[in-house]
Each structure stands twice: as structure tokens, then as C-alpha cells.
Amino acid sequence: MNGTVKEWAAKAEADYATAKRELKAAENANFDAVCFHAQQCVEKLMKALLISRNIVPPRTHDLAALDRLLMPVCPKWSWPVQELRFLTRAAVDFRYPGESADFEDATEAFDIATRLCPKLRAILRLSA
Image (cartoon, rainbow, N blue to C red; front, side):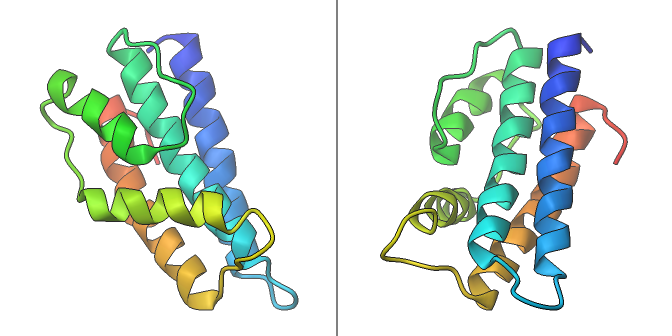
């Protein structure tokens, strides 16, 4: 695994840790941030996987778009697109005034990331 892939993976793990820590906050948990960091973790691991397949990832936060790029080059990759779309919406929509995540949104986003990241790590041959 090259250094760029390792760096993307390390950044992803930092996002996951931030989402986990914020979701557990006893007071004033920032559910918007949980959603954002859960999505960022998945996005960065998906981009690491693309890079490992010699594909330059596009500058996008759209996980469904990254999914479409991964499917032809990574036979072991598949994930329900509706969950990828939820994470994308949660990360983008809740970052700006007008919408806010609640505990249920944050829990769902973190749950998706918690189930999805091990699959991406396994394909990348990363330890958890």
C-alpha cells in the first residue's frame, strides 16, 4: 500500500474517532458534526480504495458517485446506495443553517459508518 493510501486511511480513522467521541458527549453533543465526520470517514476510505486501484478520485462528497467508480474496478465492493445517499445528505445538509441533525440522524450516520468501514478496511487490507 502506498503512502497516499495510508494517509487517506489515517485521515478517515481520525474522522471516525471524532464522530464516535462527539456522539458519546455527555453534554451539548454536536449531532451535525457526527453526521459530517461519519460521512467523511467513509468518503476518505472510498477515495483510498480508488487510489489503490490507480484511479484519481474526483473532488466530490457524493458517496453514490464514488460507489459508481468503485464498482467496475473492485469486485469485492458493494453497498446499499440508499445508505450512501443518506450519509451524503447528512454530511452536506446539516452543515448549514436551515437543517440540523438530531440524535437519531447522528446515530444512523454513525451506524452506517461503523458497518461500512470494516468492509472498506478489509478490501484495503487495513487493520481496524
